[in-house]
Image (cartoon, rainbow, N blue to C red; front, top):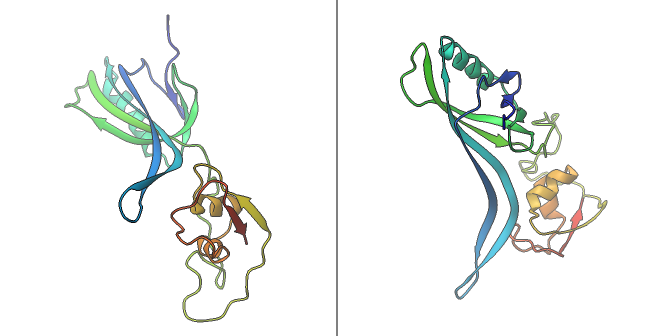
Length: 195
């Protein structure tokens, strides 16, 4: 069976890498319980990591590696098409030569981190006088925030994630929910007020 070539952005591998390793990660927080014991909080699945090794051989081996290096230098995620796993948006996070390159032989190692695109807008500039996550410096009084609704916490949610989902500052979300005694520990079924 002949596999399709691996591709990332505009680069297509002349022959597929020799080894692949896919790692699935889950974020788990450990919280100490008074008088012994602990509680684990599932923060949800993390990014999938695809790592591997390969070689470029032939008269253009080093030129091919240089072309891959130029793709690595491009910012932002790109479409990673793998011969076996589903295509996904990914960041090219590691490119490493594993031995001295020769004009006709290059051995390399790589890693991609899958991007699920949760925050497509990236960083945004806040105009002077706007609200930032830390609140205002100094003791200036601010009007009480108005409340637009509630959200029921699901397994894997964090206050930071809820704030990002609804576009509110984390400090405002915490201020609107004084019933949450520890912002680092929320439970499924709790109701969070969204300012």
